[in-house]
Image (cartoon, rainbow, N blue to C red; front, side, top):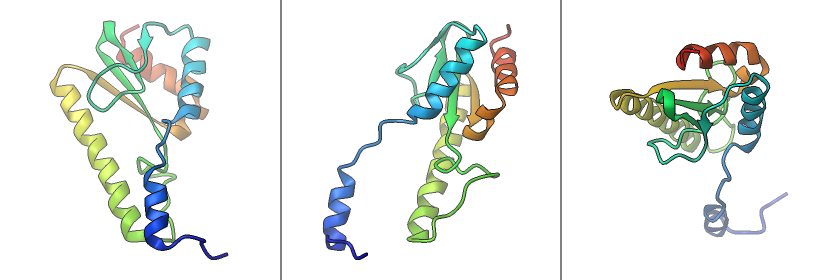
Length: 135
């Protein structure tokens, strides 16, 4: 079915759509944290890279990275349409993730990055978190 908008109009319309974060993965992580009695975390803290969760007392950040958007080596796939755009976009996301992690570490923070697919193995995720916050 052809688009009802011109390419320029579609681009304008799409540019006004703003994401609301990775709500589903964050909610799964909250459930994992709560069910394992892991406390001391906060959300929406003003830190570089906007970590999904921050353990202030332990100076530890936790990012839950979506497999598609952050280029998971196991699950990320390249869309068939507009491949040059997506290649540049996804490589930019991975590059930004690396930069943010490096900078936070330089600032004395621990950085935990959990892939979206790892949420299906809560025991592994909990172990990584507990190891990082030394509990």
